[in-house]
Image 1 (cartoon, helix red, strand yellow):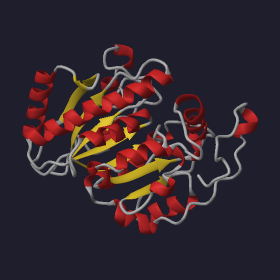
Image 2 (cartoon, one colour):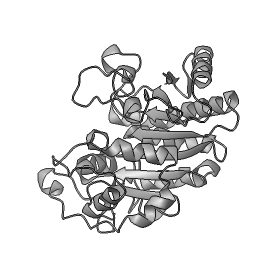
Image 3 (tube, one colour):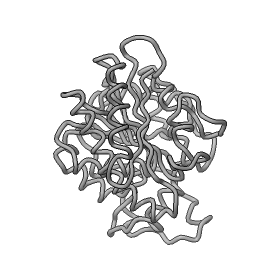
Length: 310
């Protein structure tokens, strides 16, 4: 089955020769029309530490026991028969350390991801790569865009993205960024983590917000927020046959891939069956979030521009 495991080391690929050989074999085994999807994990994983290896966790077909371990490749259709089976490339990068260290390292890893995508293009000319990433993995994806030509990455699904809007704006203004179809998956369950990013990790300008709160002015043709906590968005998805349950907890950084039914949506987006431009008109304007009690529970000041729409 076409699952290829690749690691990034610094700003490049670990074991470049071996990586090229494995990727060439995987591309040869995959159906010529199969979508190529890179999968990028977030914080706390390390491909060099067995207990924290993403290739035996969410990037595996058979994850080790853990309440947060679901097989991303399997949920995206890997292992099914037929020509629609994707080639999944699980990408590991060093995401252990302090949040500050890993936030900085994610930008460097973006250059390594771009090297991987260029290698796919060299091995299969004309092949367009799609991407799905969680948390700080979204920063890796966005950081790859300045290093890529137009169209090298076609579609991306970012899950609870741990990046600031201002930095995302720079990435999306590049040649590759302008051509990218982007679905930004958000949930108020991630509110605590967005606040920590804004105040404790990423330097921010006045009015800047975490991408996990929505794209704000970055939204537009081919770029949309999918708010899985919003009743109107869930109803629109149900009308298309995608049913997802309501949240069952107040805070959860992983609900964007643990909640049932979501991978059917992600697969449709990544394979082009449900492009962002088709989905966008069906989604109503999300309801304004209820006033958060986070500030009452955690002694953090509100960010600059907190009174602005998020």
